[in-house]
Amino acid sequence: MQTITYHLDAFDGPLDLLLQLISKNKVNIYDIPIAEILEQYNAAFRAMDIQDLDLLSDFVAMSAHLVYIKSKLLLPRHDELDEEQDPRRELVQMLLEYQQFKEISGTLYTRYEIGRDIFVKGQESFEPDKTYRHSHRVDELIHAIHKMFDRADQKLPPPVSSFKGIVGREVYSVSSKVAFVLKSLLDSGKASFKGLFRKVKTRSEVVATFLAVLELCKSNKIRFNDDGDDTQLTLVTEEDS
Image (cartoon, rainbow, N blue to C red):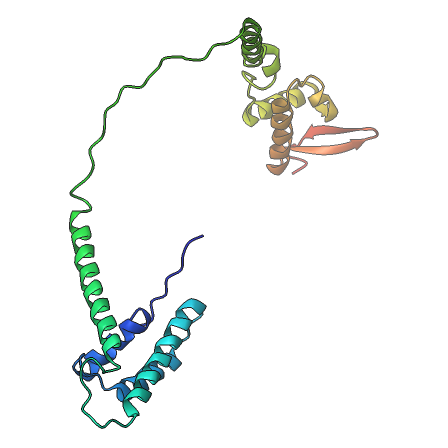
C-alpha cells in the first residue's frame, strides 16, 4: 500500500513549524521565547485540518512539550538559569539537528536533479547458459510429441469450403440491378416483385435488387400494382405522370 505523506502549507511536521515561527519572529534559536512561540504554534495547529492520526499525535506531543517547558521556566529560581539547567536545551538540540538534516536533504536532492540524466549505469553483457540439464523418461517424451502433434492439427487452416459465401463472393452494384429491373419491365411490360428474387444467389444480390426497386420508385419510374398474391411492377408512362 502506498504511504501517504502530508505537506501542510509551508511546513512538514511540528519541528518544521517551529523553525518557521522562529524565523518569522527573528529570534535566537538558543534563546527561544517559549510563551510567544507556544501561542503562535497552537494558533497554527488549531487552524490545520489534519486527517492522519500519526501526524496529529506528533503536533499534540510537541504542543504538550512546549507547555512543559513553559511551566518549568515559570517556576521560581534563586539563582540564574545556566545552559545545563535550561529546559529548552533538548528542544534547541532537536531543532538544530532537524535544520541540519533538512539542509542536507536539499543539497542531496539538488545533486540528484543534476546527475539523474547524466550518470547512468551501462548495459551489462552476458552470455546466456543454454545447457539443457533436465532428463526425461521415454514415455514423457512420447507424450510430449503427441501433444505437439495435437496442437499442430488444431492450428491447420480451415478448408476452403468454410469461406464459401464470405471470401471471394461477387459484389452486385445497385446500378446494375436498376438496369436489370428496367430491362425486365421493357421486355414483358410488367414483372413480378417476387420474381425479381427467384434467381438471386447471394445476400449481396438480394440487397442490391431491393435497393434498385426502391431507387426506381423514388425516381417515379416504376409503380406497384396489387395483383392478388403477388405484387406486380410496371413502368410509369408519360400518360401516368
